[in-house]
Every structure is written in structure tokens, then in C-alpha cells.
Image (cartoon, rainbow, N blue to C red):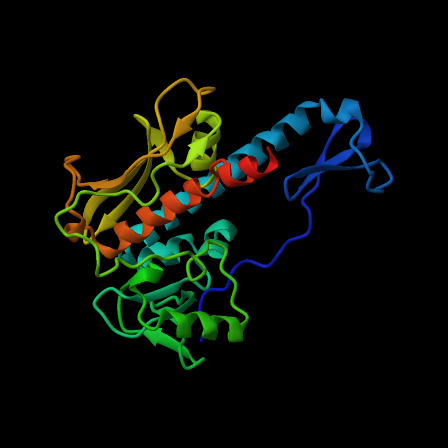
Length: 297
């Protein structure tokens, strides 16, 4: 399979600095060589404060911002199971950041059919994968969907197969926690109360936990946005709206549509349900352990 390969890892690119020193970026670190070409353990102050060093730090900030934007975009595809044209994949594949994020994502044809682990796009626009028979294959489609794991049939088998192949994913997909809607859910209800009553000594602890896991906080709610069958849906989990240093207690988990109207639980789709429960579980897990405190007192 002659797919477009990611660019090979390059040697450090050195740029001239003051007084014969040369500078480079090694990952996220600024490194330095002296005039004899010997790499130094630390960057001298006059070099660290030079215009050349400032320029490299600016490049580093751009690269970090670029990576965040790429992660957000790929995650939006995943959280919406959105079709991605082969032309888009081909356009970004040469970028190391994009390539690392996209390689080995489990994708399926947008119009249905067997999927596989993404390995690239050839110069004819064909999407190459490793299929579930461990064979290189071309997907007969011009668009693929990075499948949300809750929608992958035989997910456990796919996960086991990925382990056998030694596949690791830069953006967690197969290892993402999923939650399927139980049959006992009351279809006419509009909220889940299972994660209510979680106590935090300060609201900032709850909001910080939400933000660390990638959720926004608005109007007292932690918010997770997904796309379900092409329609925007938000899961909202109450964490409190008092002053940041006040104690707080978590409340209900609910879902709203694009017009911010509450959805009946029976109308909440599998992606929105899974991501909403995942959000509530992650935040609720950081609550104060009242049982342990009572024992110690």
C-alpha cells in the first residue's frame, strides 16, 4: 500500500545566535551549542534573552497552539462521528501534528461498510487502512468517519485486535470510556440524578477538574458539546455558581438541543448519552470523600 507516509523525524535545525552560539528547539526545549559545536547543558543568559531565542519561543508557541487546534478539530470529528473527505486528510497528512493524530484512528466509510485503522491517503485520493483481518486495504469511499467507540460494533473485539497489533492512538478513541443507555431509563424524564450530591470543599476544585478534562463551564454547569446525527447537543452537569472559594454540591445531569431546550432521556442519542455520563463521572470522582473524613475524625 503506497500511502503518503509521515515525514521522517529530522535532525535539529540550528540557527545562528549571538557570539557564535547556535540555537534550536528540541521538542519544547530551547537548546544551545557553543562556537565549537558542543551542545551545552543549559542556555547562557545572554543567549536565552537574545532576539533569536525570542523568535524560536514564538515558533514554539505557534506549534503548541497549532497542536491544540488540531486536537480540538479531530476530537470534534470523533464526538460527532462526522464524515471527513479524503481530500482533507490528504491535505493535512504531511503535517507531523496532523499525521500523528490521524494515524491509526479507527474509521469507517461514511456510506457504510467495514472499517479499519487509518494509515494514509495515496496520490489518487484512496484511503488506506489496516482492516480487521490485519490486511492493508483501500476503502471504497471518498469520505470516512472517525467512529465514536460507542458506535463501533464488537468494540471489545476491535480493542483486543488493536492490542495485538500494538496500535497506540495519539487521541484516545478505543480507550475512551463509554456508557450505554440502560433499558431502565425513564424515557419521559429530563435529567439523571445519579451524580448529584457530590461535595467539593470549594467550587474552584470542581470547575478546575471539569476544565482539566476538557469541559467548558457556563452558568454553573460543566458542558460537553457533541453532534448527534448532524444536530448539536449539549450535556450539562450542575457543579454550582457561587464564589469560587465557597463549598459546592453537584446536581443533575441533563441534555439540551441546539435551541437549548431540555431533551427527554428517551430522545438522547448514544454519543450524547455516553459523553454526558462520562463527563459527570469524571467530575464526580473528584468529590470530597466524606466517608473517609468521618472515619478519621
